[in-house]
Image 1 (cartoon, rainbow, N blue to C red):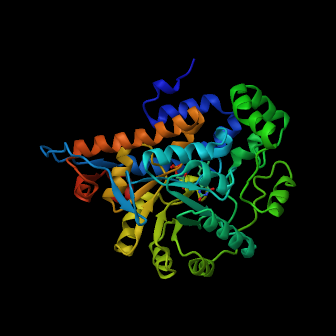
Image 2: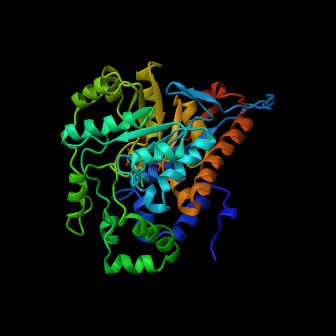
Image 3: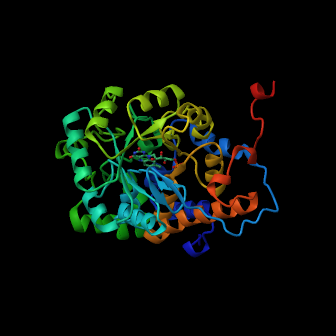
Length: 396
Ligand SMILES: Cc1cc2nc3c(=O)[nH]c(=O)nc-3n(C[C@H](O)[C@H](O)[C@H](O)COP(=O)(O)O)c2cc1C
């Protein structure tokens, strides 16, 4: 017998439950990194190297996590990152996570590659909604999508720029995990070992509308996806021609909050500012794309210095504890995004599990602030951090 949701006290516990519930191919699609998973490990290791130097005997009884970012109030410095898989992990998983985020008073980002149409999420979830955009080679189709986002009332557009080419996720191929899901002997056995997921998620989709698909994609792309040869990782349209000119054009077309996600180099932060973005998200896609990439928490200080307060800087990749949020804020992030944490939660127990994941992070951040003498987020600063030496180069 494994853990159940009542016994989950940490994000790691939720991950353990998710692993019990989901077919291996699906769990690994959500959980793992790319190639040798160096970036995935580095994202965590970089947080772990940062220690806290607490201040004591401060009256912290009036602690507050409220803050303002991307132009609006939020209950805490956290937003839900866009993740294409949520709808497969739990029935209507995107709506479940969006509702959990709304209850906690933080923004939810819907991915271009989601399984629920953006209009349904807007109708059924409420709360602060952001939409993440992957630019397609057919720009006209992308602009049509942006018009839909606007009509559906989304507050912000996040353009992801770190996926110019298809990531090399070898385990997906080994597991026979493709989009849309295809039934092969191997994954049929995997699914048979996880009947709860089959009956509570997959079968419900089959009975309602057939095999789940990327609902925000134009018909033409969806068709192409289903024609993909088995064994190939992704039939998504290629984005390798997207450039800064596209970001400039989007700035002209989208009058709401515009963010660019996947910045790791300060020079790119500078160009993004010149393109007129309202926020920069320092991210390596949770270690899922470029395996040798720097950890975002390590890239953050130089980017914050470059931006110099002109727009909000956010970060993601590796957030699994409230102390991680604290460290990012101390290094200049306005807020952080969590990707896998709410996914593990929604896999474990639907909306309640997603709520639990986000609430664990809230509670942990509150506790760390209490321990370190911080009453508001403005009290969190770099003097409270201490960096362990970590490489022979740093030691020499
Ligand atoms: C299963 C999964 C699917 C993702 N899909 C997208 C996506 O569609 N668009 C995007 O910009 N980022 C996507 N991401 C990256 C997240 O937005 C985010 O950058 C990352 O998960 C943060 O790292 P964390 O999972 O360690 O919190 C995905 C991440 C995961 C785990």
